[in-house]
Image (cartoon, rainbow, N blue to C red):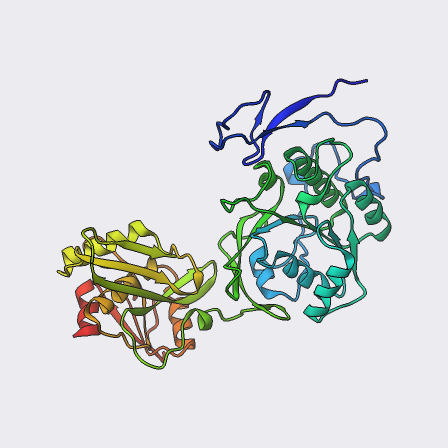
Length: 459
């Protein structure tokens, strides 16, 4: 009988050690190392996934790169346009996709909704967290149902592969990877070694059968995906489902994608009947207000290939206590301090004794420098208590000397502003080269200095 081999794993970050240690050298957490069995069982176990047909297996001998035939990938296009955009055009056959998010954010609802929307594909939804009755109740609430979506409540991977061999699904959803356990590993479900082994078995199944697999994963209290870091390296795509569960809007963001861009995002609205796709997010990111309020400006930004118009809100008030406060939500605090210094040095505004609070409406986190001008306009609007016209927007970067710098893809930003009914937009004059200004229904102000923007807005 083979000697049982054990090792110690950090339950927080997945680091491995040959012996128990009190503090993890990788993440710095205390008392997180747990002993786990890493020796595979060799007897009394059912074999893992074995492909039914060997014709689909990749040849083991090496081939010259010039002899490998390339064909355009045929993706599975779903009815969810937001998911198609995030994945790069659809689901790639044989891909392993991991989706993570906070508890109650809507991961299971999203995947069940997608599973039931694929009416032409046989889908197997494996749940280790809910019973068949609970999934049926959710399906009734979503209001869509068909006979090609099969539900399996099972946590053992060997039993799951038995059912897969009989059903031959065209798409597999696993909810969640932390609930599965393999007979090859003696540790409990959710442990580092179990998560790694179960993911490896599902990866082998996906690549050899050509079936796409969705894995739902838990996250830690820091917001990172639970389990070993190698989990994110093994999968093809990592999706993050973000948002406040007390609010209605959700954001599906890509952090890794081997078959598409990692800068795309999808926006959903949580309703009683499930998740609704938000095809025009600019309408929800701009508040509908009846009166003109100071401290509000509209900036044109880009998320991947999608132009968005977002609302920037500022509040500037005299510092009650000795040290002025600088607070930002959804925007880089260091960049905010830089813009405040530019306004004080180049514009002559005494902001050193003022509390400044900045908020990006809608819960978005924006890193695009093109909203610099909108941030400056919003701050000065609140400082002077003068409202900016609600039909005016901004798309430019602000330099340290107060110059207005050009930004990329300005035509897309202008077209989105024009489509939403804006009458004026301020851009850098260095963006005018090659830009057709004729025949547009929006007035384009080209400026080169911050003073020109301020005189045009506030006189």
